[in-house]
Image (cartoon, rainbow over all chains, first blue to last red; front, top):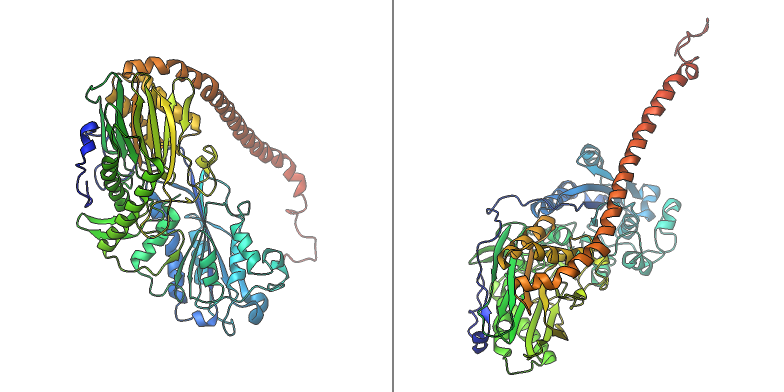
Length: 259
Length: 359
């Protein structure tokens, strides 16, 4: 028994017999790959919201690398636990500032099925250029709203739907008409509306399968989310700066280990 | 796949015959986050318990003298040992266990012990903010049996739990009954919880508030009492299939060890998680239990399993027919396009009229 509690020696032990352990029915050597789960299909969708304003210039390349690595780490975590991922898709919502950049404030990709469409995904991510945005704050909450409204998969017995945000700025408050016309019906009028969109158990994201990972500084929008919303992990930083490997592993486990 | 398991017939010190066993399997050898179950059996007392370290919430890795382990791995084992020790102090044959007071004591001891263990681990502070991430999180389901009327085979059964591990009683007339209510945000519907991997609403941990639930039920032997982590019951097609798993392996077993091995093998074959179970059958030996549960096993098969499997066969045939029709449709489309194409493209391949240059 590998923990530091002394063995039980109470008087009532004499009234009950403890079962000894014996050889198991079947064993797996340490390090041997676990047998895949039979009959269960796992589907994972990830939507990356990436701040591509000018202030991200010094760190955008690292964020791109992290995005390209992230889904791989989620998949590895699942397969290491003997869970084969039948469908893994990723999409990107690159955002700037609707007020400063107008229609150029958003670049959305469709979902890429991986590994088949790895090339398209990498090409989209590599093509992101840091520019515009004016002064902080940026339109991060609008990007989160669009990510929540993604066409999530309905296949698989067990699903995980993940939104990951990288930004170095606080979020512009949501207000009526904060997005251009094409996005108007997908972006709530205020933060309460966005909270309802996230917390809605009958909403577009599964009640239990959703996760929101924030690599964002403390400040308006992001601190409100991590203080109020369920199923959120927030690393307060400029787009993930200073994230330790231990905390990174904890984040990946929070996504993959409970599915 | 198993890491720890056992089956035995306890020393005969009373007239009440019994069968008991436990097992604990790990998806990844040496990294299982379920603890070895508690299983102690005596003439008037029984103690069963399972603990499932929560990998999603407790994925943080700590350095320990035994190597690097997740908080989930450490929590389940530590809580198991703390609880076993405490319960052996608390339960005595001649006492009626005070359930609410015991739940409060379990809470107090677990909270203080886990907080002390966390401090010992001297982990660097995390910068993460989340209601999802917890320090040393684990479920617990504990069943304490006290015989209240030896002549009548009556037992008081106290259940203590936090999280989604379960206790069940299975009786020859009514089949399986869940004794604990899942601490899940989505609620307690056992069928829905098979497909909806809901976030837990309550679990034991070192850094968050938690509750120890208590329920007392009266049981009449013969019955099967079991505690199981979700790796045992959350990967079957329905709650009925979990009962079938228990009873069909019982019917095929030649002794308790064979029953354990068969049940463990069936769970291992379907589960996507670590799995731990402690089971106690009271009121008959193995042959007696097989006879007592024979009719229920047949009824379960006839009324619940067979209709679903019959429909499965129909669905499979319909899917094959659909696939055949889709292939046929694609072939026919190609075939008909072949006969239509000549006329359709009549002007596309014709030479350009005199005086016009090809683009």
